[in-house]
Length: 112
Image (cartoon, rainbow, N blue to C red; front, top):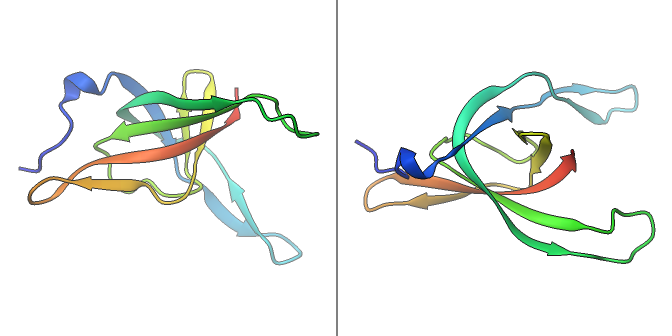
């Protein structure tokens, strides 16, 4: 049996959406997000900032999803309540003595 975060600590249900891809008329990859799969995890806000650059939302926050779910990748989306996040880069897999234990996924808010 693989060690994992105890289910009592994974208090949030989130929707994990893997994008489908296509190519536009200019040869660029286009990502489309449809429905997803419900998984359990724990979502927490890690830090916040108020940059003053033009054209940006003045509030930026970093969020992390802790989950036992394997396979989450960059550009996937996570929906938590009314917030939609995009996975930033590859997740950080955490290992126990013998196998995968849990993933720590850095996210940025894209909607909500």
